[in-house]
Length: 73
Image (cartoon, rainbow, N blue to C red):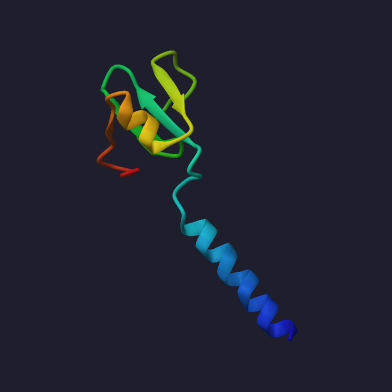
């Protein structure tokens, strides 16, 4: 029984590590018109004033942003 629980826990950890970011972590760049996962490697200064925070992908798209070609949110 313990082995089954350990395997399930290991699988859950591996899955969460493979997920690029939480669904609530999006940043939109008002200069480029693109939105990214907050962990995108192209974002050097996430606190810059030209980044807008979004909690959903749909909200960023509704505001006219397109998805980043690198992180593909």
